Structures are given as C-alpha cells and as structure tokens.
Image (cartoon, rainbow, N blue to C red; front, side):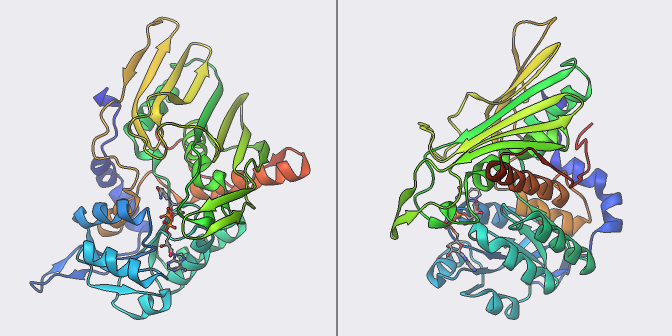
Length: 391
Ligand SMILES: NC(=O)c1ccc[n+]([C@@H]2O[C@H](COP(=O)([O-])OP(=O)(O)OC[C@H]3O[C@@H](n4cnc5c(N)ncnc54)[C@H](O)[C@@H]3O)[C@@H](O)[C@H]2O)c1
C-alpha cells in the first residue's frame, strides 16, 4: 500500500529544519571544475564482503565523493578503490586520517574493531557511519556519542530496518490501534554462519550483534524501548572451519533466544543463530516466510521475508479475516544504504529515522542477554531512545 510508505527524501527534507540546528555543517567538497559542491567526502575502512555492497551504493549517491579506502590487507583496499574509481587507498587508519581529507568515515571492519576506529575518527573530527555494533558495550558507545557531540560531528550505526516501507506500514498500523491491545511479537533470523572471517565467532562477535541485531532494532522500533530482558544463549558448534584460516574455537554465542518486556503487558521474542538450516543462506531476496510477527486482540501482522529486505506485510483483523498484503513497494530502500543516508543528512542538514540512541539501546539488549545467560537472572535496561519512531 503506497500511502503507508515513507519516502526517504521527503522525510529528510521535512526534518531538515530541525536537523539543521543540530547537524554539523559539511565540509564542502571541491569539484573538478572548481565549483563548491555539497558532496560529502567519504572514506571507507574495511574492504571485505560488505564493502562490495556499500561501495556501489555510495558511488551512485549524489551527496558522496569517495575519497579513500582503507584495509589492513592493503590489496583489498586497492582493489576496491580501483573498482570504484576512488583516488586513494591506505593500509592503516593513521595513514588514512593523515592522507587526503574526508568528512565521513564508513566503518565496515570486523565487529571488534568498530569501537576503536570509530573513536579515532571522531577524535579526528570525522562524522561516522558504523556497521553494527557501534561499540563493544553500552558504556563505551555512550562515550562515543558524547565525543561526537563534543566534536560537533554525527555518529550513526547500522542496521537500517526502520527506514523500510514495511516498517513504516507496521508502525502506522500499530499507532492507529488497528491490532487492538498488542500482546506479543516474534522475530527470527539465522543461517549456518559466515565462513569467510573468524571474527564472527570470536569474543566480541556472535550471532546477536551480527544477526539478532536486525530483529531487535525492528521490534524495539515498533514496540518501544525494552524495560527488561531474559535470555538464553549457547554455543552449538564449538569449532568452526574458516576459509584460509582453518579451525577456529567459537567464543561468542552462535544461538540465542531473547525475551523482552516492552512494558504495558507487551512481550516480544527474538531468536537468532549461526546453526539454522536455511536454504536461502545470506540471500534475503528469496525469503517469503514471516520473520517478524505481531499479535494483538483485534489483528495480526507478519512481515514477509527478512526485515532488512522486506517484501511486504500481511495484515488481518477481526473484521477482515482474509489476510491482505501491504507495503510491497520498497522504493529506493536497500539494506546497504545507511552510509549514503548519513552523507545525505550531513550534506542537507537533515535527520533520519535511524538514531545512535536506538543503536545503543539494542547494544544494551545484547549485553543484557549475555548477562542474563551468565547469571540466570532477568536484567533491567536503562538506555532511552526517541520513540515512537513513526507515529
Ligand atoms: N557480509 C555481509 O553480508 C554483511 C552484511 C551486513 C553487515 N555486515 C557487517 O559488516 C562488518 C564487516 O563484515 P564483512 O562480512 O564485510 O567482514 P569481512 O571480514 O569480509 O571484512 C572486514 C574487513 O575489515 C578489515 N579490517 C579489520 N580490521 C581492520 C582495521 N583495524 N583497519 C582496517 N581494516 C580492517 C579486514 O581486513 C577485512 O577486509 C561486520 O560488522 C558485519 O556484521 C556484513
């Protein structure tokens, strides 16, 4: 249903007036003709798997001028720079920061490296778009946000599920009370786990920050901040075979069940893991199951496919027992669009639906889930974020 769709550009433009007061002004990029353009100069650090999805999106974004790539494996940085006509490539963040100037760091490195590199970039006065997680803990993530505010720069973290038309439809349906009294929700995402890098399984990695993070972002975005968490996590496969590395001992959870209390009687559940048989693998395009479900006293909704690549929302109510599908048009939504959105916000002074506070709340849920597993207790949460995201 197209009227349920939030047009991203319209949103950024509408929110621009508020954002302008808050956002740091972009350093204007100098175009080859000598004219001042509003393009934001971007440096991409981490040139592995996900960079192959981000870089083409950034290269097409009219607000972006790609300045440099960086990877500790220098050849990867050079290959990606050459593939996307990026002028410079570096093998270390120090060289990158001392090299050709840029405004926005896009951090696509190993999960354990995000916090340290995000901090270094913020210290150097760069805006940051970070893949998840934004930091290794809530406390250090809050410090990063303080630092960003002090430096008058912006900080955001993946994922982008709250900007999809499916999310907008679900949020508006909930806000309109069409489900009656909301009671329960479920989210699930899993596959048999990546083989290309060991960090997914090492301390600071895990299926929660890699996969569960999408459903946690979507369900907290729809149902509101979580008051407390009870969880069980486990390691199902203690040793993994990783390409070019060999056997790796698994230290982080590869199986997780998280129960969340959103207050007012609403309870949700997220399950994620690296041991789920899934014929779709990492590719979301073929998935048609409901991976997010929300139930209330008068109706229910199911998101078709993954929340990071949704194909619509099936919705039925007491009065309309036949399920109907809505929000099937995705517009320009893409799961890899976050850094381009960040550049757009910096260039226009706009705001977006994705906030660092929401990313920090999800990080706190992940920390609390692990604490709940360790202690056998239910864990209270404290971090706030602006909600509802869409009313
Ligand atoms: N691969 C995907 O499909 C996918 C999708 C969405 C999000 N992500 C997220 O993106 C991030 C990266 O995942 P990936 O699959 O691309 O991993 P990857 O291993 O393929 O790539 C990570 C790259 O970062 C580089 N790197 C590590 N530390 C560095 C440092 N200090 N400085 C510079 N470069 C460094 C590595 O050499 C490697 O090339 C993770 O947070 C992951 O959760 C991945």
